[in-house]
Structures are given as C-alpha cells and as structure tokens.
Amino acid sequence: MEQIFSQGQLFVFDLDGTLYEGTDHFDYYAERLLLDVAEENKDGFNRDYQKMKEGNHPVKIGKAYDVERDTVLTLDPFTLKVVKVETWEGIVWSDEKLAEVYHGQLTFDFEKMIAIGDGWWLPFAAAKHYGVKDCHPRYVETKEYMVTELFQLEQIPGVREGLIKLKETKKLVLVTNSDIDDVGRLLKELNLDGVFEHIVTSAKKPSRTVEIFKQLIEQYEVDPEQIVSVGDNFINEIAPAIQMGMKGIYIDPLKGELQHAQLKVVSSLGDCF
Image (tube, rainbow, N blue to C red; front, side, top):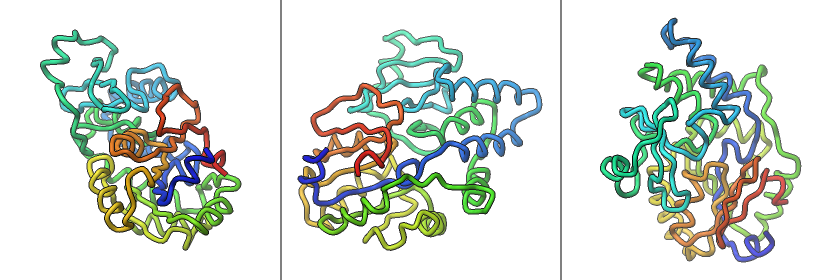
C-alpha cells in the first residue's frame, strides 16, 4: 500500500460505496422499484433480490446483465470479455453459443447492457427481469431519501483525516455517476467539502471511464502509472484503470481473490489510512 501511495501523483476517487458505506439505500431502492412490479411478480422479485444479496443467484456484483436477452454474464475481470453465460434461472450456455453471441469486449450502457458493479444494480436487474420499463425515477427518489433525516450515511472513520493528509502532497479528484446536486449534498454531509480540487459528476461510468481518465492525464500532465483509481466498482473504476497502465485500489468487503501487480484490494477505504 505504501508503494501505491508514494508512486501515485493523482488519486481518482469514486463516491458511492467508496467514501461512505452501508447497504440500506439499496434495500430502499428495491422497495421503491417493487411498487412498479406487477402484482403477480412481486413475490418473485422479492425472492430473487434476497437470493442476490445472499450470493445464491446468478446475478452477482462483478457480473453483467444483458437486459434484452435476460442473461447473466461472467466476465474476465481484467479484459471484461464474457467467459460464461447463464440464464436467469442459472442454466449455462454452451461455449459455442457464447462465442456466437458475445464476441469481443462488451460495451456497457445503463439500459440494455448493465455492468453489475455495485449494490445499486441488483434491484435494477430484478426489476428489469420482472418487466419494469423505467427504473430511473425510483433511483432519483432513493437519492432524495438519502439526504433526508430519515437516512444516515455510514461515515468511515479516518477517511476525512486521511484524505486531507494525502491532499498535502497529491492531487485528489472525484469522479462519480451521481449528479451535481447529489454530490454537493453528500459531500457536505460527509464533511468532505473542499477536499477534492476537481469533481466530475454524471460521469456515466463505465461507458465514459476511459475517456475521463484520458482527460485527467492531459489536464494534470501525468503518466498513467502515476494515477491511482480508487473505488468499489471493479468494472467502472478498476478494470479500465489497469488496462490503461494505471494503479487501482479496489474496495471489496469480502476481499476476494483478485490479484494483479497494479492492484491492491482492501475491505474499506479506512484501511488505506
């Protein structure tokens, strides 16, 4: 960890799930989406979402979901190429069918090909499977709920002090898919106002991750190996960084077995400080 911090000159942080923790907001999002699920499918939605949270469903964080084909895709974590395809019920496609349909690297969007990089996408996938056409209004409702007194952000001990100390010698940038109003409110509640010298909101990761990284390289006049991408979403923040020659700090509470010379896996951002 010391080597990554000493070699890095520009640190690019995610917001949701990185600078604060907790899963209650994902459950709230699921509850809101359930309102849009047809009555005959509500039990199925609840059952599948619970299985996802327990790790007993094909849909898992780190995979992808093809909305149109209703398939769950296992990816090589570093190349993001499809290595396994399952139906919603867990039936595995043949290698021949996989090669015919999913050749080359996937292109993700937010409607048809979903990178399940964090807990936001589990209820989303369940909602899409059960026929919900538009999930965005419920996402907006959840974000609004998160800045009310009814919701308490789980601040991570030591992070504010650690970031301020890091800022003395490094450049800190925030890149998030949240919109500018959400980011302002969340940073204020986390007491992180003014910590980041540059903030990119509505980033549309992972579809624009590489583009944003290239812009930061040019703006800050640094080499890729001098940049450290920090986040809890491997597909959004870590895999693209490693592909570009950058370093990554991946926040994974389960501390899985991912290994790479340019990668450090931690259970919480607090572990870095």
